[in-house]
Amino acid sequence: MALPPHILEQVLDLVPDMCFVLRADLTILDCNRRARAVTGLAATLHGTVTFPALLTSDSPRPPFDTLNSNNSYSETEVRFRQTARRAMDALVSVRCIEENGESLFFVFGRDISESKQRELDLLRFSNVVHYTVNPIQITDAQGKMIYVNPAFERSTGYSKEELIGRNPSVISSKKYTKEFWTRVWDEISSGKVWNAEVENRRKDGSPIFAQLLISPIMDMDGKVIGYLGSHRDITEQKALEQQLMHSQKMESIGTLAAGIAHEVGNPLTSISSIVQVLQRTIDDDFARDKLGMVQSQVHRITKIIRDLVDFSRPSNYQMQPTDVTKVLTDAVEIVKMGKKAKQVTFYTHVRQQIPLLSLVPDQLAQVFINILLNAVDALQGKKGSITTEFERDDDSVKITIADDGEGIPAENLTKIFEPFFTTKRVGEGTGLGLWVSYGIIRSFRGDIAVSSERGRGTSFCIQVPLNPKDYSHG
Image (cartoon, rainbow, N blue to C red; front, top):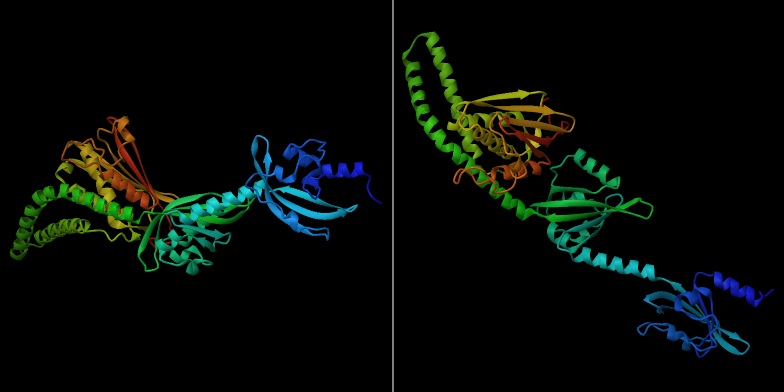
């Protein structure tokens, strides 16, 4: 049973797509409510408007002239004009039907503007990702690489064919523990963004330092379906920082060298000679025993000087199990030898046992010496004390270096880690020591905090991550 015309018209008005009925000359006989809403056509047309007039001048035209009444069909993407709005992209389906000896075209148009916009946005995004200077990788939800841009290939030395389908660990430097990457995975798989400085390896084995940002890719339901990793290559920057660190290290050593040469060098030679002569000429056991103690102290001082020489050599920048307590103790012994430290009393407190940490020992020593020298300077040659303390919790080791000197003015506290900021007189410092120290600790994924009160001293708290599963004192 055929539907009455008025029922059919109501049904067509309920259809969310545009519906048109055209004569063979493409004039519009009728259309539904959606078509009128989009095009602004009147309810009564009288065959005065043609279908092509509804399209923009640059829009493709459906192939009406190739269709006939043998149930022929075509689909075309077109663009409809819209009053006071941008053109609407639509997918138009056309059928030609014979009705009472007359050929009629039935046209159905579906709005695809949003999908076209998404395609355009995706195209723009893909071009940005593909041609950006930063290495980019995209992985699936399991962490297997499904895309790398040309910058990633250039940076790592691998071709995309060698990388697609593999885990990003192919470029890992192997310097980070399994627990470290487990924590990273837990964070990004929960939908959070992770950002840190990492060291990787090129195909030829050379290091790549990068600021890595890993961002989860989520579907409409908030489910993680992949990850985007953006690498900002800072290899050259790291090389320059290391040169600067070494230069600052040399400045610190230079500050100490004059005092050591005068206060230790000549007297040490004299003491050593006298002890050797006395040991050969005295038969008294008690005296020989005491001379042996003197000789051991001479050896201790000799070791300090040797450590000082070792410290002045260029770093190999290799992470290794490091006894933080010993590094600080040795740094204190070096600083004690300076002329300014004669009236300073040094105290060290170890609250808990400190395991070996994966760090760069001479860089850590550089940090300790820089802060200890500043603490000595804060005492201004007067009697005072410098206290070092070690504490640990489940995640980190905290090293506090505190003095009871004059303190730092509040207006300077926010500036002390800035490069070239110093309150010392010209020729006494470059203002790079604390800036370099901050950079070193941050490269260990740690932090430095400072607190101070005028007239009551200053305290530096150095915090470095703890991973007791890797190294311990046994």
